Image (cartoon, each protein chain N blue to C red):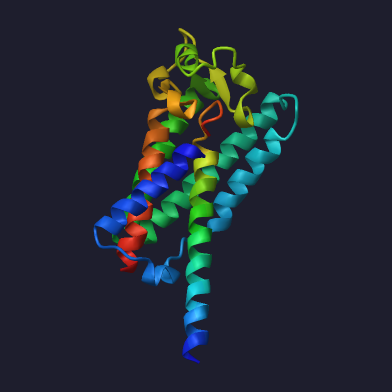
Length: 181
Length: 39
């Protein structure tokens, strides 16, 4: 969550510098929020076990979860005004850039060299967060869209889609102050 | 009356912000959540 927090704080800073103020933030209303909470709840439920879930169950849960997030992003990209709508479009792009490699490889491919770069070379990839990662190999499709970007200060390995998601979160934070100003 | 209105507006603002940040954070974990501790 460090990266997410930094993105939101950065967006707020930009929003303030551009003249935005929190005065009317009570007018901020994101649509269909229960959709994204449901998406998170099913993934967390899947990840609660100490051993990997059955593959068929894992696949159904991950697909359903990502579909719920995609629906939430699309709804808000359509109905939020100005900059907030654009922020949700960027978030949607990030979602899509993560869905593609996951759909092609049955999970988010993770680069072993990127893991070593953040000092996590011993990490067992398919026992990672919420059981949705797989090791990247020579046979991985669209590996370049996977978790291949090491971020050593955060101890994380992220994807191009994650960058777009972080950018979207920052733009949303900045836009929320500006729309309300 | 003015003080009550100001307080309720502030509460509404806090509620909206918490809801929005929570929703975005949930989307980050559900659609992103990089491997290793950075998520």
